[in-house]
Length: 437
Ligand code: DTR
Ligand code: CA
Ligand code: ZN
Ligand code: ZN
Image 1 (cartoon, rainbow, N blue to C red):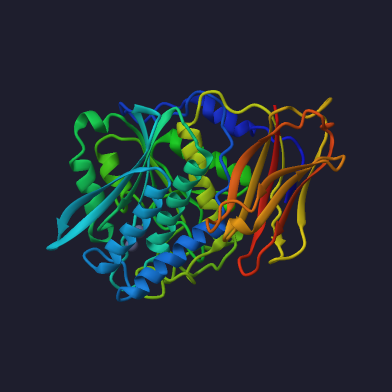
Image 2 (cartoon, protein in one colour):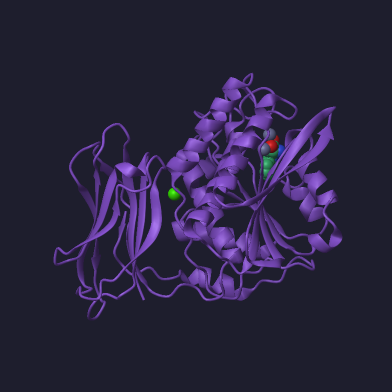
């Protein structure tokens, strides 16, 4: 879809953010920071999918599962931890014992933000012994992992402190998250202003359920889906059934998303969401068929983007970015070692010349980014090189460049041009965005 109209905050989101809804009789506050809702980055589905592929490979290499006490679980934890360490997080492994086996929680703190106002996002990383647990709960784990990596890519510095967590032994009875909360001193618990839980968010016959716990967190998710025009329902089967329960039990505001497990989708739900009525949301729940084939990409993409939206809006800076955005989110395939391709936006309504600090948002999903030459082309044909075969074997170019475009007339067709100059690695332009002050 090509967005050329200036992006402005949706009315609903702005009202919700300003509502500063009271919390359910708790001492903590998950309220947004008083500003209007801010735009979060798109979470590339391809990246989330890649994490699921990697978790599937781990299960396959470790007896077919990633269950507590099995080698596949520790391999999963090590996989996630390595990515976060490389992205600049402060990580810690918390151990516990359950059923005679050692369990692991991974806690990852993003440096900065008010340490007395912590926003947490968590997912259990363990599967059942019957299968690889890709929807339950690779989906939640991969979505918060990619959101954490997006925070790092953006160099995001929120007002509040961000903490991400991957829990062990949820399937045995929320063991890991209970261990974390039980060992969190009371003074630390009061600093946690919100805990967001994501357990099964890519179900193959998906529903769109929002936890009905803290009203501010609930409204944040509802606003995101309202912006998509996707109806949601209150999550009614969840109380006590996932890792938000220990947090709720000590008075921490909680919320989350769920795409359904073994309950059956009704005809009314199929009418509004699509999919198959009379069939469970996830027919492979706790089964060996919970593999990478057991995921609905639309649900996974929407929910991963909702994770980012909630993280940005519950922890964001009080002064939202100003400006008018022109964006093109249509995918454009980049031919391997081939001709250059472009994504364009048509800028209108901006008087005079472009600014000396024009923000150019580039989102190119491509293995071995060093293959790429990337340019910004102004309406008069002037070329501004953004990347010239830099970054070597690292994947993707997903960052915002600042370009002195003050000699260019602002209105007109601007292009992002990408060319792959070496064979075998491939990718596509996932998005191109210009932000005018
Ligand atoms: N207990 C979760 C699956 C689950 C079932 N109902 C809900 C409601 C909300 C979140 C998760 C769930 C599991 O099997 O991991
Ligand atoms: Ca996305
Ligand atoms: Zn489960
Ligand atoms: Zn689960």
